[in-house]
Image (cartoon, rainbow, N blue to C red; front, side, top):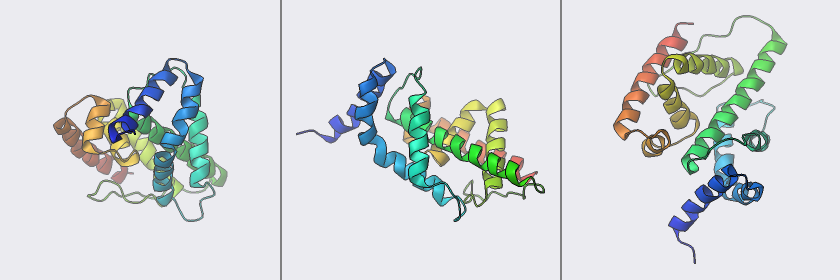
Length: 191
């Protein structure tokens, strides 16, 4: 009989094996992480407009394809895997939004505002593109603070999981989170 501890360590073991070149480890890992990746995808898609043509299952499938291509990734643990998965999903949606925006070629992107809870639901592809641009700008000057936003907001990680993934204290994550919220509010609000 396996314990909760055994089940939580098994994905980490498979990630490490996959990093070491064991292709079968990924096949064993997928069923263990699929539900969490689906939850992440549904969370992303809930922020998109209702008529979005991309579905959560397609987002998960595309994320799997891109994750497989990360052959040189040195996975640290489950939190690191989920954080990277969230980043990949965000990248897919941003690429999709940029392609849609380029198709339309119309007008300026609408003004995006952020409330005190950091980020409101992303209602249009322009919002996601603006947020992505702001996160890239933040990453250029404060990479760890940008990572905190990705892990907390997009990855859904707790303060503790974020601290573990970044190898910093929970207090550091809290400070970075507060700073990033204000920085993004100013960056996106100034457009």
